[in-house]
Length: 494
Image (cartoon, rainbow, N blue to C red; front, side, top):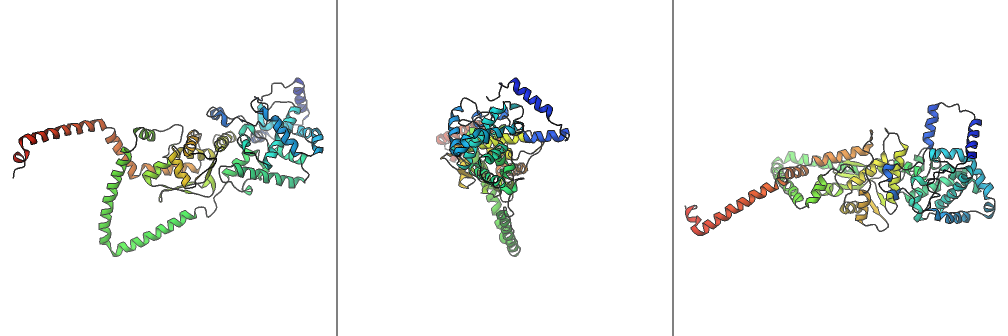
């Protein structure tokens, strides 16, 4: 644990002395508090997330920053980090490392401390050396990414403020400041594109650009939630609506000229639909295992209430299609029974990145704000229950699987993430899509028949079995009577 209890009295005197000598700020308290909240961006993962899966939030190989740098389990990487940093510097920079890097970082002590809040408590010299090594190592990873460190780098408690990265880039780079800032921004965005499970917005779509964000996880979050659908994003849906309208016009015209054909055809169609619906629902209910039925009917408090992919596909013939434009473009068409979802890449780093983005979003927003990303994760966890759900989404390119993960592994991944949006007052547009799905599903004829049969047939199965047994005994006795006395002569004589 990196909560430093070894702060000396001399360090306390230095802090008090600096505080006394500092001129009072002219801003009011509300503005000051607002700025402090904005700067406080690297906090401990809330316990409600951490206890669910500690390994997803605690670095396994690489410790960066005050939370995990000195943790015994990852400290063995220290000399590998030093070796990587030395390899990225020239001889002059190595020989004058104290003056060129460490001493200059000390000027950022107070500013960087604000990013960590009360957790941050170490002497200036330790601070400067720690961030010099960790920051330069992270810069090395931005240029030459090692896949084995991606999960650890993207964890909330392992974030390094961009303020440190920009300062270090300036200290060790030979280019001008404005060119240097542009180069760093480009590398940050490229890194996010390489590790992101979702399609990202362009850098120009986020306020201030990449280097003006707080840290790497913050940048990835902004690039994901600010991905906006292009004007032609729903072109396919609009085109489909036009085609359907055209077909309906043709059918109406033919119906006017040949009404008798359509009256007979309509009657046969209704009979066929009712028959197939009733028998289809009955077959769907009785062909499944009893434990599957219980699982579908039970409201799982750990996930949002929404039918799974396979249930929507089998019962309602819902189609699943890829939509461009990120999580803000998710939509369900009740008219055409199409669920539009963005493509998500699933690999060995996906769970860690999803979990830490959700945790970061929870720490950065107010209680009345919308949890856009958490709602998306809740949606995916709600519609994916079994390997077959994964298979259906994978075949439609909504899930792109890497690292040879099988369908069961992916289903377990999404089932292991609990919902985190239940207590929010405001909800994003995703909640509207979920409401549409549930409304259309619960009001469908198939589901109504299914629920009716389950309520009045399945729950009365013991009674019906008893009645059937009695009838069988009666008919068996009647048949035996007929074999002995000849029923045809006594009951069916003309």
